[in-house]
Each structure stands twice: as C-alpha cells, then as structure tokens.
Image 1 (tube, rainbow, N blue to C red):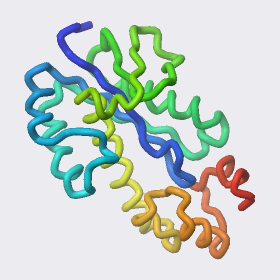
Image 2 (image 1 turned 45 degrees about the vertical axis):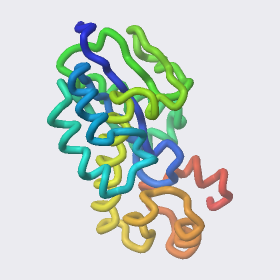
Image 3 (image 1 turned 120 degrees about the vertical axis):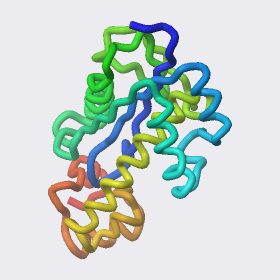
Length: 193
C-alpha cells in the first residue's frame, strides 16, 4: 500500500440504455499528474473525441498502474445500476498490482464493497487529474466497444449514440425491437417494454 500515489476511479455509461457500464482506476505520481495536466487532461465530458483518443496512450504510459472493469446489461438489470456500477469499479481495482492506500472517487456515492479509505469528490473529474484520467480511460474504452458492437447490432446507430437513449435510438428500438444488450430495466421506465 503506497501513499505516494494518487488513485482515481470513475465510471461511464451509467445512464446508457444499451451495453455495459465501464469503470477505470488510474494510479499516478505527483510528477506524472503535473505532466498530464500540461497535456490537457480534464473531465472527459469536456473533451472532444479526438482529444480523448490523443490523451489515452499518454495516460496509460504515465500511469504507474491502471485497471478497467465493466458490468454487463444483464447484471445491471439483475442487480440495479448502483450495484452494477460498484461491481465494475471493484473489477477495475482488482486489476491493480497493489491495493490502493486511498481511493479518490468521482461523485457522492461511497463504493460500499470497498473496505479501504475512500474520498468522494463531487465533480472530482474536474478537480483531480487521477479521476479525470480514469474518466478518459473508461470513456474511450467504452466508446471503442460501442463502435465494435455497432457491427453486431446494426440498425441502432450505436456508433453515434454510444448506447445512450437519444430520441433516434428510442425510435429505432420501436422499429427494430430490443437486443440482449439493451437494459430492460431502463427501457421499462421509458415504457418501451
């Protein structure tokens, strides 16, 4: 357990209606946090697709360690989004070589299954480079998966909507039906099933 590193964790795809929720944990030294800040690392939602794809290899190269985890649409439907999101975070953390001394988590929700020190930071992806880096790793990883799933599930514009419930995506579900990767628990709320 090393106190010198900052370990940030964030998830992406929590509000989507298709596909898994992804989480990433990124471990950074003070020096590499500074370097990544100079490259323009910030909250992934504030960056263009091109900028995120430019930053990803730099984050992976400069991180002391990182892990990516996911939880499937089936798990989301079975356990609910909060528990499934926690599962994806725990899976990301289990891929790290060492258990972090302290976690910096984006948002107000505690990671309930984690029995270590954790700090919840509202808008943490704008305040901590480790969380911003985790948000970029999770976002690019999930977006890449969505682009691959487009080939398997054509007719839903997944490459464009990334699995989120856009008006266009919802109308394509009405036209083409739901797939096994659509989150049925989310679609019930939209009265689509």
